[in-house]
Image (cartoon, rainbow, N blue to C red; front, side):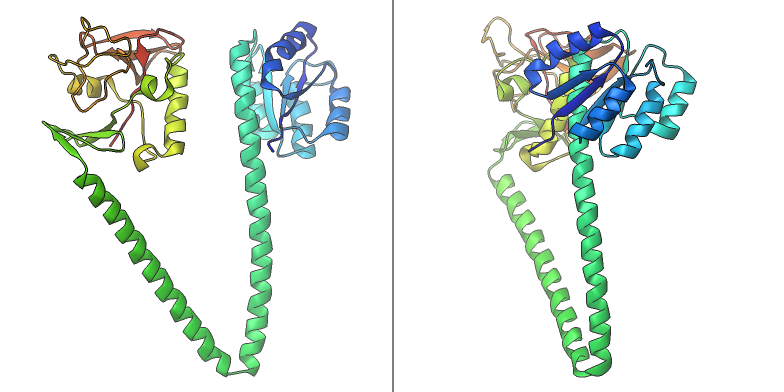
Length: 341
């Protein structure tokens, strides 16, 4: 079970009070304190913690110093620094000593705080898994070394074992070759079956796995969008990017290299005489989707193109035009559709 213990250190009581209220729905084992000494005692007595969030302006020492101590005490604990002054010296301190996972700029955006802590817990899980793998690797290396010593001793006393060893090596190579051939055949057969069950639709090929290929560009698209798969609208550009990671983890269609399209890629597939309907089934507002896409999706789709720090572009398939909006733009007509090369 994932470690969800979170410690937050800040002299401002209002920050701790607000954080406690907003993090309550996340079911974290949350502990709050305002002093460094108290925080170190808590870490010693109640650790390990998955995430520690600290302000940089503390009474006894700077947050960077505190996180440096924490790094020595609990290297797998993910460290997050809150600061109102993101200066170059601070960044240098963090890079050279405390290795902070994320910065949180004050005044705090608590939506960002909640998301960042969640990402920190995931990073802690990753670090623990890497540590476990390293320990297992070291164990296996030690066992391997011991076996090699035993083998060398036996080889020096029993000449016949050399022939057995060579036989086993050749057998292993043969097994690897057979496995490789089998894997290659399995992949070929899967692709062959996919091609046999595909449907040719003009310049497009639609596959039964929910993908569609544009033969003009050789780009493969998701025939089903966010609204169809998730049965809701995305809450903004940031969630669109998070969804990319989710789709790749799930290997949608058997692939893990999906991405947000560019505006030009959307423009290239826009169909002026499209007849598909969106999620609301309004017959007077048909979409310019390719026929290979499934009906019932959104009107507009986020691209991968950012405009400054806070905005991004999306393409509207009702009329075929692009617009720029805040990344937090939450409109029921918007959706996400991914592409891969």
